[in-house]
Length: 205
Image 1 (tube, rainbow, N blue to C red):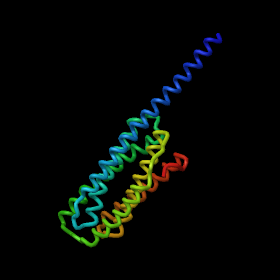
Image 2 (image 1 turned 30 degrees about the horizontal axis):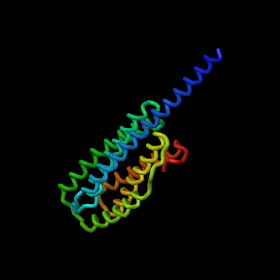
Image 3 (image 1 turned 180 degrees about the vertical axis):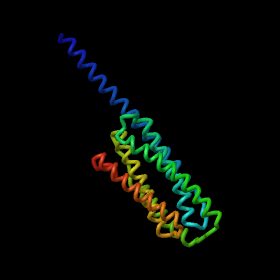
Image 4 (image 1 turned 120 degrees about the vertical axis):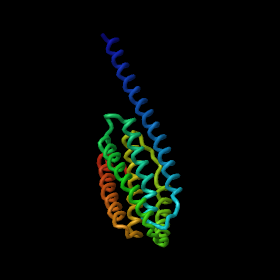
C-alpha cells in the first residue's frame, strides 16, 4: 500500500512537471512569434512613403499596426487554447481590428484620390510619430513567466502605440473620418489596456 501511494505521488509530480514544460514551450513559441510579428510590422510602417497627407500617412501606418495585433491575437489563441485568460479579448481584437483595417484601406484610397495635400501637416505628424516610436522602442523588455502575462504585456504596449499614434494625428489633420476613427481607437484600446491590467493584477502595462 505504501509503495502504491509513493507511485501515485511520483506520477502526480511527473504530470505537474510535464504541464510546466508544456506551458514553457507554448510561452517560448508565442514570444518568438510575437517578436517576428513586431519586426514585420515595424518594417511595413517604416516603408510608408510620404504622401503629402498626415491622414493618409497615419492610415497607411495603422493598417500594418492593426494587422500585427490580429496576428498576435491569433498566435495567442493558438498557444493558449480554450484555457487562455484573454481568449474573449483576443477574439474581440481580431474582429474589431479586421473591420477597421477595411475601413482604413477605403479611407486612405479616398484621401489619395481626392489629392488633398498638406505637406506641412504631414511633416509635423511624422515628426511627432518618430519621437513616439523611439520612446516605445526603449520602453519594454518582457520578463513574462506565463503566456497570459506575455500576451497582456505585449498587447498593452501595442495598444499604447496605437493610442499615441491616434493622438498625434488628431493634432495634424482636418479629415473628419480620420478624426472619428482616431477617437474610436483611443477609447477602445485604452479600455482594453485597462481590462488587461485589471485581469493580470496590474502588471500588463
